[in-house]
Length: 442
Image (cartoon, rainbow, N blue to C red; front, side):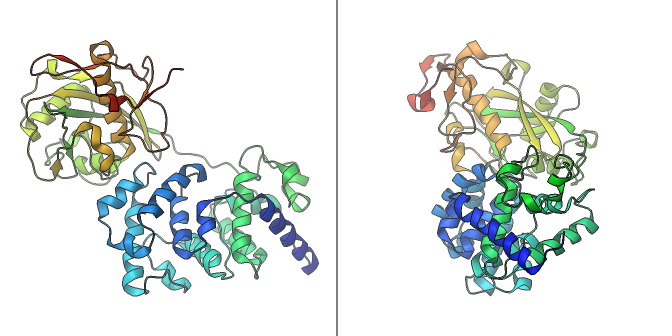
């Protein structure tokens, strides 16, 4: 639909008034600066607002300026990002911060070309930061905005095809409010996120309803066309949680993980990043993790062989205490984490590895997959023998591990309060109270 100048003014006014009344109170909107806007936009890629908010607050609290982000240890940046996923965003964020400090005087560049040259900054992020922070008349186009525009014009077909996406960008450019581009872009994104949702849009609450062709044609459930998702690839990984007499465990990174000893036949389906150890590391976001192997037939046997060949550990079947399987997803890959707790006298001492206490992993950059394995091990230790060998994801009772969850726990993990058995003397001792910071019964 083409607007006359009067209609366009009315269209813009209606959305901006709605946004002024209905906008969510978000921490980056309170700060109103380019640095906070940029951090929030990177976090919100592939991440819901409700999930991103506490991460943003912790991240900005630790790195309040671009200089502090640029100068921080890389592992500290990854540690604060841990749990958000897509860790390349965090790595690019710090690289971009370093370029901003070195080449742009510590200020996010105001020139569009300079913004696009920063690592991890594409057309959408550049337009968002420049319009919101610097009031430059540039229109953003993301999934939420594209859905709003497609329904306004009843655009059929796959919106992500190059032709459709170009047409949507042109439409967004024509509609952007030149005097208040930042508020306009946020209003369009807010409308798509809260009202013009993918399923069951709240058309009766939409300030643009009278302009919407999809609503007039009664096809809001058909526009935009739902994209066909790739069939999920199922992957099984076996991991070893080695535990010494002092409660320490072993974490490794890429390279050491297999020393090239994982056989070629164990290549992971759907991965093409090179050697199997690199593929395993990619599934753990190239961060610290437990020794792991892809499972072909027998996870326990293959893991035992891996521990013997790479870490020179002489382990036997009796030492493998089965942990409940965990589920994890990386894009279209559905991963089953089959893990085992092995209590040993001494941990191997190797380069590119570390031996932290099992209860203190939150101080290191680890992926959610590693967190899930660690929580399973902690629950087994907490339960004692009553939880052994279940091999299931269900547990009796409920505990929360404050070491492995953030201030906003993803969930309350199931487990039963118990004791720890130490292998060197078989003595049963009470589990330390801080391991069970809070008990909650369903």
